[in-house]
Image (cartoon, rainbow, N blue to C red; front, side):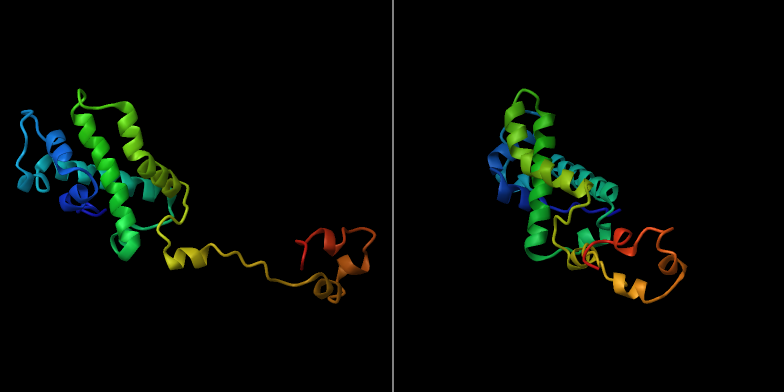
Amino acid sequence: MSDKAYATGADLIARYDIDLVGDLATDDRETQDRDLVATSPKVLVALEDASGEVESSLLAGGKYTVAQLAGLSGLARSHLKAIVCGLAMARLYQRRPEAADGEMIDRLTKDSRDALLAIRRGENVFGLQEEIAASVISTGGPSVVDYENRNDLTTRMSRYFPTYDSRIPRGQ
């Protein structure tokens, strides 16, 4: 498992209102200094928890490895950060029940939860090329004519055995 969150505090405040994140990350109900929000211990814990949730979904789905997830780049990496940040916001809202609105949390995290479900199902959420290639099914093999030209026992005694065209996939 990775020891580092897949998104940083800076990623979180780039996607969500810095004042809201700061308010959710404090216990004394005072406004937190904007410069400290991204490095707040509570924000970092929420991001680590969200990253752990992504990794557990990943391992349950069996489609990706932790190394592949850590090695994402470009737009796929940004998509991963968006998923983690959405889950982290839900965690921050859960810390402050009086500020939490169930519908608001559901709206904030809908895309992240949908992505987690897709990862659990083993879908190729991040578009990794080797995963795309691995999902292409080859249906090659001998055709019915190849089987009939073998002149084996099943061909010579066709009244006792089902025909090849009823035993192999159509189009072969």
